[in-house]
Amino acid sequence: MVDNYSVEAISPTGELIWPCLLKPDTKFDEAGVYKTKLKVRADDPLAVKFQELLEKVQQEEHDRQVQEAESKKKGSGKKVRLSDMPREETEEDGVGYLVFNFKSKASYTDRKTGQTVERKTALFDDNGKALTHDLVIGTGTVACISVFVSPFYTALLGAGVTLRMRAVKILKLMEPPALQAKDFGFSDDEETLSSNGYGFGSNFLNDNVRPYLKDRDRTDLIVVHCSATDPKEDIGKREITQWHLKRGLVSIGYHYVIRRDGSTEVGRRENEIGAHVSGHNSNSIGVCMVGGVDAQGKPSDNFTEGQYNSLRVLLGHLTTRYAEAKVIGHRDLSPDHDEGLPGWHRRSCPGFDAPAWFYNEHDSAR
Image 1 (cartoon, rainbow, N blue to C red):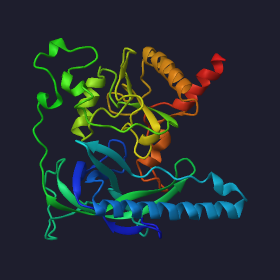
Image 2: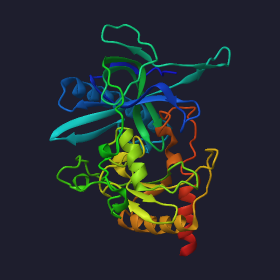
Image 3: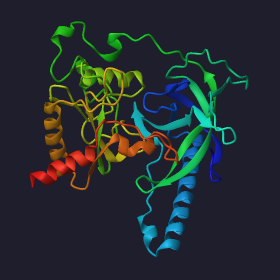
Image 4: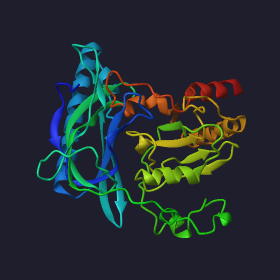
């Protein structure tokens, strides 16, 4: 449901990244969510105007919350903060880009009948003609999006906005390419993988040719995730990197991966902005524990003793380096996945209460 303060807008034209428009994502949300990212040049006048609109709607929500807080208790408005924007900044070949995050629920409850009504994303071509849902829409598809810029506020996240898709106009359709090992930089002889490269060629690891990722200005959160794989899947950085590349990321989104045997693998540079929790990437470090679901795909705290030992050591080092940072689980930021609005579904990742576990461990060690 759209609130009274939402603003209708049309996004600038850009390239879709990891579009999930035909079939909703139900892996992390039982109700299902349509979503995509839209990459546009940062110097595009329409992109600048669109970003200014987001900031205006967010600021108005912030001011409303401050006014409400002040009416309840003088001075309490100072606690109201601005949440991160639903967009990221990146640079490719010296050109700056903005990547906006769009979402919409795949179903809603009819207030009169109480029944669940399924939705589909409305798709149109450049002439305004409705498109059928037998398309295959891949990363690189050129499109613009009709959207509700909807404000929200929670004590944890602050005052922010979400981009709720209404319809997508496709200007140039790109189907997903057939993936090959060489697309990911793997060498021909996979028996000679280096321990630090996990099959990636030297060019990929060369800072002179790798995609430029901005560094964080602050580190407020250390977010614990799980890979949502069952205990028999002995995966690590290499496999997760492949998954993230297929989703349109420029590299693995996590900063650290803890394998089933307890070994810790380094993902993104620690001071780089990650891609692991929407709305909080610019101020957080992401740690992924391999496991977290059972053979039926249901949440399970099935991590090994070695993993917990490694997590304890890693978090100890990180909280020493970033003294103000709080350790939380991905599920503690559930609103990031369901638009921060009333009725969001609590996700289970990483499968255990990370802050309770970590801080209880530290208290008992004192």
